[in-house]
Image (cartoon, rainbow, N blue to C red; front, side, top):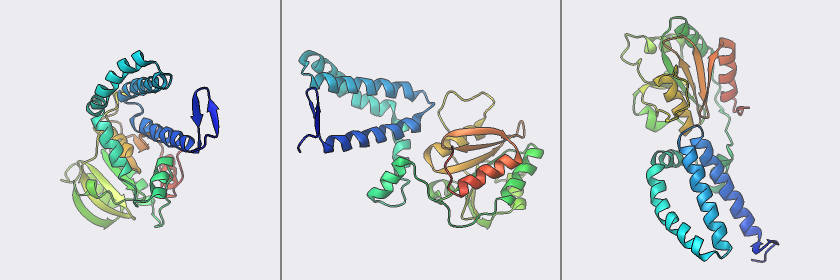
Length: 268
């Protein structure tokens, strides 16, 4: 392919530009998946080592290339061991595409969202959260816009019932056998309760965030969901999305966040 321009000893063509863009996009999405975890420093170090190896190899520095090449040979195996959880999370995230097409994959890499075409009445959810917060009853509610989360719903008890305040309060009642785990809501239905959610491995979270909060963050790290949490200790309402948590929300703020998510609006 004819180069478009040259940078020193490097010839840059259209293929190289596309290659660099896609690699940069892929690295950005990987970084966003592990952002805030202890794996970030390891990832950056491995990235810098790889970049240095490519530069010295292109510059013809044979001795340094040979030395760094040995690190790179071992580095691939080391990366698989060190990043096994992150690799699993990334593959799960990539597998979340609803169609095996190039446009679907590129759209997912770019972070495009699909608005839910089925109207959802958020009032029962918000009113249930208000009542649960008032009685300091812990709750974990997962809202999904585009996926029925089959893997997670099958880890709990299938319900497939219309969303209602009384049903949510009954599920999270301390005497209910369904109160542990998360409730999954999709297509305006409670499709499962007592579902097991993935827990984030981030080490930078405040100590007051318990297992429910960590599960909410972990769920939104690997799926395009919004997770509502009611703290059993404080009664505060929190909402997790894209791996970040907004805590101590008012009822009005909770309603607004849920509506934004269900309408497909991106988090600012």
